[in-house]
Length: 255
Image 1 (spheres, rainbow, N blue to C red):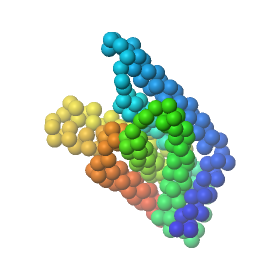
Image 2: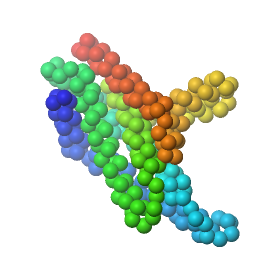
Image 3: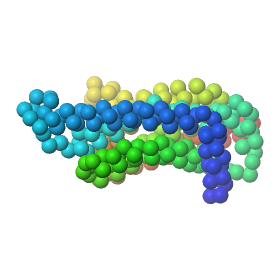
Image 4: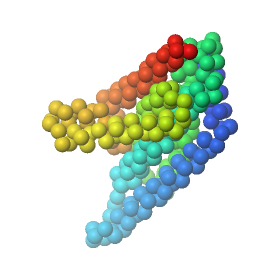
């Protein structure tokens, strides 16, 4: 555990020494803030009866604002998290420090978990920025706690899935740009895979729908924590970390 935490601290320092962490925080805060204001404007216009309802309406903050906001946040993560993990192993390979890492008295599992913990910590800090916006909603409104907590849990699990895939792909190349774009392409495939199922038979549609990352997130944004969705994301994370381990093992033998 000490080795994992020490490696995670080293990785976090590396993120903040470079402009990457600050750029990610800045872009994420900017995009989330824009979607937050846009969602609030739509909710206010609906409540004032500006969409042809015939007068002011009582609206549910969770349904009209929180749920769409979490959905838009998932889109932001799809675009940004691939580049959070792009440097994890690719930069080590490019600079030649991967050999030192692999020959150090640290197991592959500890290396993988250390980098995963560091990336998840940075991701958690990004999500922490959004609590300011949620706090404003509680200050001026009365949203329900349940959908917000489950929504954040869904974002953490989805983000963990993105990060595990990003680490696996980063371990297969020494080019950060290739790692980032390849991760985005793979995640986008799992994002839209259910679209293919819509034009297929019922069995194929069921299978492809289950494989879709987005399909499993929708219930979280509604306030529903289904164990099947949790199992899917945990399995997705485990698969990504397993592929990373296999890639490191291959690199160790080839080295």
